[in-house]
Length: 80
Image (cartoon, rainbow, N blue to C red; front, side):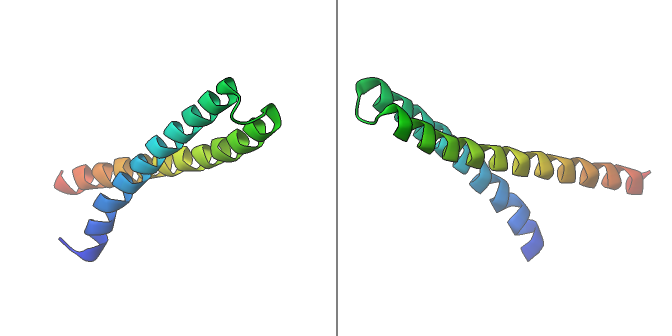
């Protein structure tokens, strides 16, 4: 397994972990808003920032899935 292969394995794990962490943060923000720890304005500002980051992570996951599909398709074509 070469260095490029190792990055392919590590990168998705980091992205999946990042997605879960953002989900946890957003849930915590909501709980803080409901309990009065943060006000509505702060909640909206912070949650918008994390929602934007979440969209970027989801796009990275989609791109990885496309690359994986293309790679698997190419491998099948080569085997034929």
